Structures are given as C-alpha cells and as structure tokens.
Image (cartoon, rainbow, N blue to C red; front, side, top):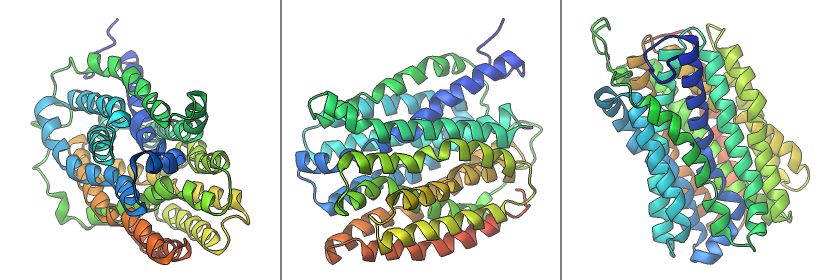
Length: 396
C-alpha cells in the first residue's frame, strides 16, 4: 500500500497528505505566540526597549512579506513538498538557536530564520489544499486552520507554566517548541520524494496570469494585510496591555490564549461554511464588527471586562482562516492559487509591517495604551471594506 506518493489521488494518499499538512500547520504560529507571554522577561534579559520589542513583533511580517515572494518559483522548480520541508528545517534551526543567542540582535536574527521557514509553508499550503482536495477546499482549509490555532493556543497558554517549571528560565520555555517542528519533518521527508512540481503549471493549464493586474488580488492583499496587522498587534502586545492594566502574567497569558483558542472551532466551522458560499463578503463584515467592539473595549477599560474583549478579538481573528479560504477559492488552478497566495500574503504582510512597531512607538510616546488602541479601532474600517470586496464571487 502506497503512502508517500503525493501525486496519487487515493484515499490513503489523501489521508497521509492531510496528516502532513496538519503537522506543518501546527507550527505556523507557535514560534510567534510563545513570545508574547514572556516578552517582559525577554526584554529584561536582553535589554530591549519597547520600540525594539515592537521590531521583534514585526520580524514575522517582514519575513512573510519578503520570503513569501520566492515561494512560487521555488515550488515550480523543486515541488511544493520539498520547499515546505526546507521551510520546516529553517523553522527548527531558528527555534533551537534563538533563545541562546545572548543578545537582542541574535535573538532577532534567528527569529527571522524561523519566520523565513514559516513564510514558505504559509504560501504553499493553500496550493496543497487546492491540488489534493479541490472539492473540499473550505473543509480542509478549516482543518489546517484548526491545527494552526491549536499550536498558537498551546504555545500562548503553556509558555509561562513551562518557563516556571524550568526555574523561570524563559530560554528553556521557548526552545521546547522546536520539538513540534521536529515532529513535522518525517512525513514531509517522505512527501518530498515525489519529483512532480505540484505547484507549477502543467501543459494543460491556461496561459500564465499576472495576478497583480486583478482587483480581486489587491482586495485579498489589503484584507490580508489589515487582518495581519490586527493579529500581530494582538500577538505582540495584548499580554502586555493586560499586564499594564494590573493583571498577572499568567492571567494575561491565558487571556491571550483565549483569542487563539476561539479560533479552533471557528476556523473549521467558518471555513467549511464559507467554502459553500459564492460570496464571503457578509462574513468579512461581521468579523469586522467584532473587531471594532474588541478594540474599543480595550481602549475604554482593559481591566473592566478582559474576558469579553479577548473573546471579541478572538472571533475577529477568524478573518485569517476566512482569507485563506478566499485565496483558495479565487484561483481557478493550483498554480494560480500559489501565485495568488504569494501575492496576497507578501503584499499583505508589507502593509502590516509598520503597525506593531508604530503601536510600540505610540505607547512609548504617549506613556499609555489609549492612543495605540484608538489607532487599532481606526484600522478596522479599511479591513471591513477590503473584506467585502475580496469576498465577492470572482475568480482569477
């Protein structure tokens, strides 16, 4: 019985590919969400200012924007599975080395190595879904979004307790997450044996398209950028916002984990439902309303109803699986989906780069969180507009 040939459309092959896809997806955010709960300890240990810490929260979006642009060419030449394997190897190295760099520069550098690996996997997973599961795009996207959120939630909730178990050594609390990346390697080693460039064009494909010429691609890119801005400000600063409001580090970590935990059921349900609709505009607008309410609540009184604000922002974060589903639906072929995914994610992350840094700078300048949180309330409006445009029933 053949388990490893990615080109075979057998039930067993599909199950193996799905398992590999889910193991990769678990790793797509835990390298990021593990930082926020111990950011104060990292800053103290490495001597980081708030502005430099804001730069740390921007490392993921910089890498995702720049490295993601190379994914389509690499996939066309080597095959998507091989490139994903390479991305997972980079992630493993980055996670193992960064806690022990000894200074802020090396921590940033090896964080960038880890995020470069994630960037390649980010772009190519939607093409694997389109190629392997063309009739179940919404459902499978929902499943791997669930896996992503499980990884993000686990890292957010468990980093502080693990750090405490190791004698409050935040370095050991971070390096343990490299084990998840190691576990994802074996199935992709097997899938990489397939020499078919799964993401590249085939002789029967239509003429290559330039997705940058299509309004749909730009709407997806702006929506991706706006939701990424919100997500990475939450990842980078939400625990600190709660801690500055008087909550304990463990409570702030759990509240932050709640925003990811909500994504576990929402990712699957929303993606499966959105995949059956011709238009996803209404869903994008509804999620935007939740974001407006959550950011406004934090702006008004973060400690008054912290669980409510975390819940509202957790629902708003479901914009991520929604945009992944829309990317897979808007492209007619797997090759087009790779190009659309690379364009939407790279341009989107470029849009998102300044905001986490700006939030930290606004906090330093104003001495509080009201100004940066007001900024986040304002950014929710263009997100809603872009989501409504991206959700229309159009294909490239």
